[in-house]
Length: 174
Length: 225
Ligand SMILES: Nc1ncnc2c1ncn2[C@@H]1O[C@H](COP(=O)(O)OP(=O)(O)OP(=O)(O)O)[C@@H](O)[C@H]1O
Ligand SMILES: [Mg+2]
Image (cartoon, rainbow over all chains, first blue to last red; front, side, top):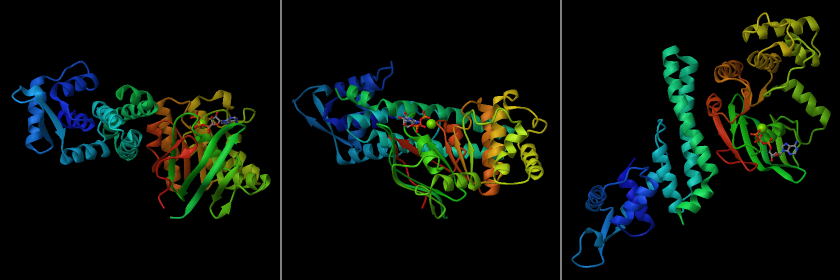
């Protein structure tokens, strides 16, 4: 799960303080494990160094919480590329996919299209594995099966999520 | 590649319920295509329109060079008998007939002599691992065996197109895989075009490509050409 990209995505909604980003990260993506403040600020300073965010000092002389972070064009381009490209079709992707869906909804992007793109990537990989099963030996076939069952689980999650996008949109945009 | 089947802006309602709303779909000769999508989205209705079982309210269906939706019922049923094979989820074998008689049925209906039809049915059943079951009635077969008999019947007349609606729907996953292996293996060998409706991604992965149906429309890439 990419913390820098997720924070960038959250920043694309609006300029934010570090503590706002941490709170939203923990709410939607932390899944019971909160992101330490130290990691929030070290990530933000790396993003600033790489030109993806800039700081907007709103009150002089304060600590880190006085600073608001603003995404740059380079940062926005990176978020967009990340959202649009399907994740490589390997099993155990749910958390990345979930982050993309939530951010796409927050940013009013076509989440359903992203899910369709991902579904195609998954099915393309499943076709390759099925071909291995059809033409290969038992061992290769069983290994392919392992991949197929996991990709199938991802796909079911994609379908379930696609069917609940409206409800999820309401929740993350409220 | 030449188009084997084409649906153009096909719409069809059951009373007040729209099942298809301008569906476009293209299948090339020899292609194996899976139709996926949520329950009630119109997958089976699309399949039935392509197969000439239902006639759309609007739009066109083409099979090879022929326009299917404007044909009369007699011409459509002759076309189904001569050029199409069907596999459905269940309830498709004639219970009064033996497995071998079920398999021979399409050949008899197209006028083949009984002895020749029986010989071809036996051959086809042997290929699908059904030797020795020819004398049983459908009530005496397991689900997987019955589905293989249905597949043998769909394949026996070497149709140009096989339409399959949830062909593995009532089977466990291993038996379902056998059925798909046989269907896809035979279709590839004979160059048969297959249109397959399934909600199961593992089944869809046997196809060359998949399309999604949502709210009566085909939403993902419509065709390869
Ligand atoms: N014979 C019928 N009479 C009335 N309504 C029908 C009939 N057949 C289908 N429908 C309706 O048309 C719509 C599309 O049905 P269809 O059977 O094509 O869906 P499907 O995608 O195959 O669904 P499933 O995955 O559940 O099989 C649904 O709203 C369904 O209720
Ligand atoms: Mg159906």
